[in-house]
Length: 441
Ligand code: SF4
Image 1 (cartoon, rainbow, N blue to C red):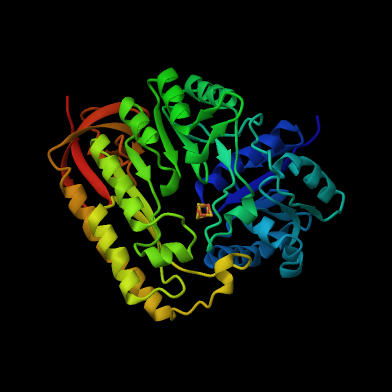
Image 2 (image 1 turned 180 degrees about the vertical axis):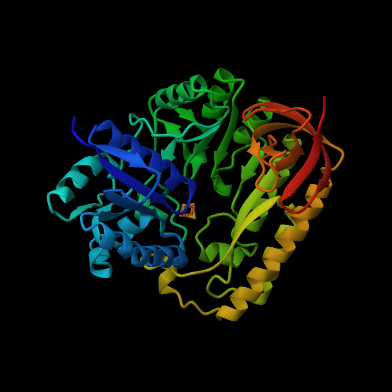
């Protein structure tokens, strides 16, 4: 029997990258020539599945590459490669920036991963970075570790071209998987004991199965109806495409989680326009009103950028006031960093670093305050919690999530719930990130 080569994949960035690592693992193991290993030590390949969204993310990869030189010293035959958005963005340039990297594979080329690795074993430098208008990997079985929660990419790419974002350049245009392939993947997850599935895409609201004309709200309805015991989540939505019908679909099924991640980025219409977000503050708030009107016990999270070019103090205050008005349960908050190749890169990055940091800190402080207040309002309520396992701090304390995606910690000594069990927990205390409670009989 042929000795399989060991591949260690280290993943950075967004959930789509983590899903792609499972696709890459699926492609390589199916070939019968490669196996995925959990440890870099003793592996034949180390692949970094990279992110390009912020400059910081790329700096992390360069630092990691420096560190990987020590592995190369102890294993002369080790081959190091880059996959993901940074591979796509830098392409050939990667080889000039690091003499360690011999393989570069972009997000639409994972089908060719076996061939590229084979060639690199024969001494070739391998590069595959073509973007595709059709690739969805719908026939590839992802290599998943066992668990209760899984992700399924239902669409890939983005057509929005926000001026600060590299995604349309690194992941190409929008395309959707067939409804049939999604249903059959959820079926196999259901059969495999998974309890929760998250439908994933850069902009899931744009999902459309051309053949059956199934749009995203109807996809959600179908999955929720066929798999009533599974929790169904989704990320990420664009405020422009957050339709009434989508909110309606969420309100129709108990197993569609009442959690929406709806990035607003800035509270200022002028900055939203500069960002090419194609909606204004009024539209965003009107969508929030609709959500509040239709859904009960729901949670909202968002993305916010501080210090976009030309952002004034007044624009920044508009962001803070929108946060107050909506009351987000969670937020991913960043200071602006220019990305080469984007439209905003041509604008002057004119907000001094110390002002960006101060504005970001104000956003973070306000968000922590709002999240704590919102979580405190949960005290006294009871929620169904899907148990995920022991908490980090104490073995007797277990953690799980509510339907609206709040993390709940509870004492598991009396109930002895198992991973994947659903328990009812009454909330007794809260901080800005976590709810704590007691299991009800
Ligand atoms: S919607 Fe905008 S921020 Fe989101 S992936 Fe598309 S271009 Fe990037």
